[in-house]
Length: 141
Image (cartoon, rainbow, N blue to C red; front, side, top):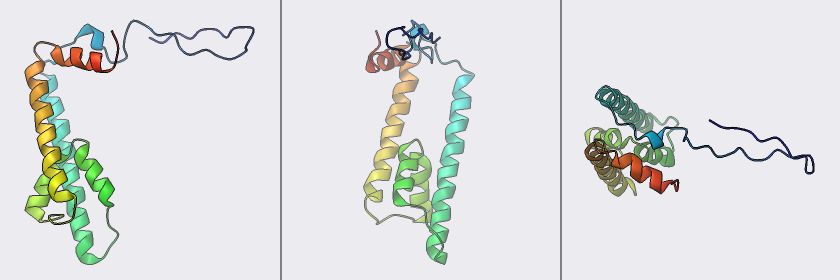
């Protein structure tokens, strides 16, 4: 965990926390994803995508009634941050944001990107390669 150094008497300022040998999320231990973790993560993803679908539905309804709308940047951010499935389903089923740029290109791209990331994570989970790659990406040795 984090250890704080005492301030040096000369400068009177606190120094930065000392770097420890453990990371906060335990990447060094190369913990494997257990079989109990996968359904929980899938349930969280399904709930999030359901919420994104509902937000797109609400924006579609607001467009018809003239109420306040959800910003396009918010809709795109929700799709990018893991809600690609819900956003794409809302676009197809509700026929919402089908012609407005950049939605026809961005939503399928987010969906493909997220499916690729999911497949890489599922394939690499057994070997611990995903944790190793993330560890290297963060620049920790």
